[in-house]
Length: 495
Image 1 (cartoon, rainbow, N blue to C red):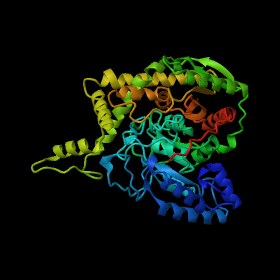
Image 2: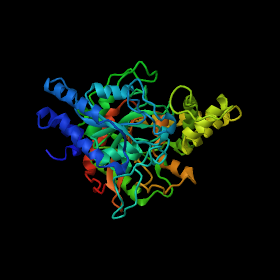
Image 3: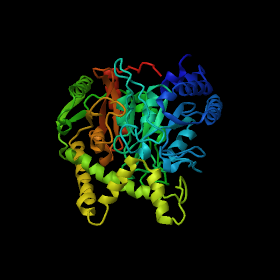
Image 4: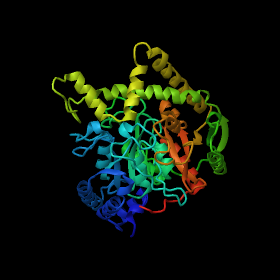
């Protein structure tokens, strides 16, 4: 078999079971592809020794007939997940040299299932960003290009390294995390599938925290079936995470029938934004038509508090970030600044944080500290929390009225060029999250499915939002959409 790295998880799993290929062969194909793609800057800590060791163990396990679905499949791990003995930096200078003595629950569950870790993937620093331009490792490059234009494009963020690596076939799948759209937006920008499960479905233990009430891990894969396979391995109750749900994990793949007859799909009128590109508008309408043709009932719905979602998110997320990032002080782990004669502990904190945190992280920490300060706590933070409750209630009302899933665009545009949205106006960058943040604020599952190309040949995604804990149903609706859209485009290889 040629081009083993281009296989999907499902194809590779079946080939492994049939004895057509070994995990070592799959892993070697991916390692070779990774080494030939340094220009994309997706993998930042390569772990070939660990990968080959796990691949050999997986081959033994498959031979013995005791192998879960993920066994022997080579994947990448976002640098936000702590991995024992392997640098886990959250793409920040302040965690330079940090090698955890423990493994995050999600990466441990994948390892227990026999998945092969190829290395750690680039991301925005502390997951703060929508373009993967805030990383200490430098920008990740999207494998897609506009027509014949050589301009480097963003893969989206914060899980940009994961998105780029999966789209470029450097790994069969990757882990991502999503605080305000950081799985779904990069998936849409790179023509892959990304699902953020219900808050509490995947353990957050051992994942470097950004905003604890919003963060959730999920898989980034080549298609919906792969997302179902990988999500099942990542989920499950974890007593080490107090927000982890004690719920049975269904066989998500078995729920992919493609039959959505009689399902009610809501189209929220508030997501029709001023200045939305005609291509996104058309894709959305086409997606609704595809679902209707598949037997679903399309209904107009209202989510009236949507317009307050971005401002509420950009109060709550930085507030939680400023609290979570207070622990990075140069005392116990990570980087400590060089101190001058006579410097005390205050100077050590100041210098360490000034050197260790990038501009975007500093900006969010300052915003967060401000909205939590005594005079502004009620004016900003408490008000944002009340708005969040209203946003959650909007969704609850819609689902109570019988709607099974909600269809929206995933992003307000296709991938933009690196450097095109400069630091001059961070708000422009924040607007990238306009369709995704409501899902995090309400703790719901959301999935981005590639559904078409824009006029310049770049992928565009559609988002489906599901009922809480009903990822299986959501994946099945996404599967029907994927089948109808028939998206099979891949980036032309230039790297």
